[in-house]
Amino acid sequence: MNDYLDFLEVSKAQNESLDVEQEQRKGSKKKKDDYATSLSLLKTRLTLLPEFDSSDVTEELIVSCLHARQRNVDAALELVCQAHIYNLTCLTAPLNEEHIFLALENCLPSVLDKKDQWGRPIIVVYANHWSPETLPFEIFHRAFTLTLDMLLMEKKNQESGVVVVTDWTDFTFKQCMKIPAAGLKTLVHHFHKAYPVKFHACHFVNQPWYVSGILTVLRQFTTVEEASKLYLHGNNLSTLHDHIPKECLPAELGGECAPHNPRVWAETMKGFLADDSSQVNDESGSLWN
Image (cartoon, rainbow, N blue to C red; front, side, top):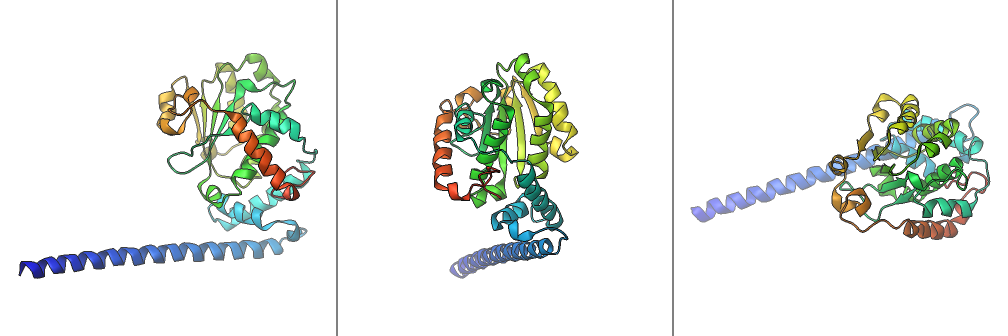
């Protein structure tokens, strides 16, 4: 009898396990079907837009916009249009690779070796490395754009989004006054309204009091939901570690990894741009156009 009961229990467990597996497969299939339907609908609606040549829009841009807006077709449609218009009208200066690599080598920005606990790339910016005399704000904007371009070539990153950590240690009042309000406004508009990326969180650490002006500009041109993703930690790195574990962060951010070497990312970007130079638009300097 005991053997029979044991058999029934094992059989029941196996059936339950099979049911769970079948449900997971159904869920996975449903997600794929929903995605395919959303993508098809988005492409159709693009062709119906008046005075908009959808033939100029790449498949990569459409897919990435759909991921960035969590498969919301209406929101993705607006993002595709905004991104396409932005690339054609705003990023018109020729790409100066020498300046771009200088920015990357100075961690403006860079990408950490390890992703966070959710598999999201961690972009870091060391603000005090910025010199307005040698690196105009527009170069920082372009370097950030190309960094995102590279990260989003990986489909997982399109789905997961990215995390940004800006360290303001030793950032001076003089440097702060050199940040152009118009350039900052353009950057915020670009990445929140016209670029196919999900920013899950933007963390500020060691920010001085005068950075509050930058925050005012950021909040002015973002929605309440977007502004809620901006975290101010000051000198309290333990609150940063509540969001990103120490094992993912370099020593200068209170982490357990070795100090970050931005030249590694700069070299990675150099190889990436060299390999994909045929995909980079010479005028916009973007891989999405």
